[in-house]
Image 1: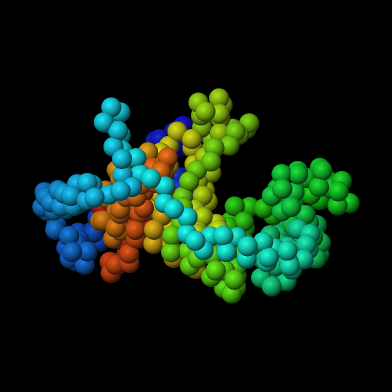
Image 2: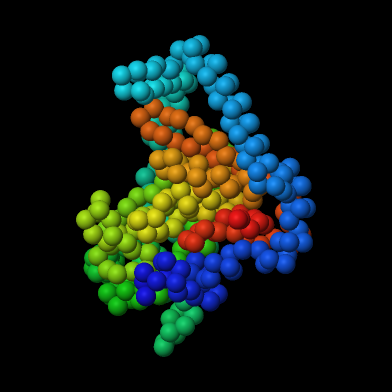
Length: 351
């Protein structure tokens, strides 16, 4: 059943991820009525061959421009024996030392604060713990007790302490800790609380010193999973079953979005997910990701739903910068996706 769900042979009604593929697309009647209007708003030809000719001309123009600048580029060296090129590292800005000294000065003047106290202070300002309050159950638990248990469960899971050790350290029972961790910390509650925290943090005056979050990075980290869950898959790197936690982090260190994906799937197919579904007030227009060239394959269709894409190269790593820009939506927008992810609203059918 697990493999059939992943392959699409079995679908789940009203599921965002495992529904039938047709549910991701704009209805055929709606798309036929608004197809020409959508392409006109994007400034794209309706004919596929004309679009490919346009792309080929643009590629030739950009390639010729880059080739013309190669001889005058002092940062570029070419290794003929290995058929490789290398870009020199950018020199550090002279303001970097001053910024480091300012950072050390600020940290020296900031009082030490325990993690629990910091979470309580933030909850007093944002009330993010209300997302973890559970009204069901066989017995009534006072809201204050629920809030305390949810806070302890967050620390236990977030710090990888575990319910048993956290119960021994806090004086709570193992049953209370397990109940809070199992029933309060749902995916929906964690995402809603994260959105509240990010939105609160970006409105603090000091957050602007770290950037406006016009850019973000998207990267995955693999984790070994000893149990059989739907998102887990075999990984030759982990020598067992695991998941890839694909995360999007803004330039101001704010986590926009994260989602577990099977290890065997290409991360490039999920690049647009976080940009379209993060639900925070941040609006990144450029995302840096290292997906070994497969990003271009996925982003080849990004022009159709109204996205622009570009590439960037860094020393010792290959990265791609995907630039997004808002365009006029369809009168009745729908959505288009690959099998395992969602993309921009209002995307047309492909093929």
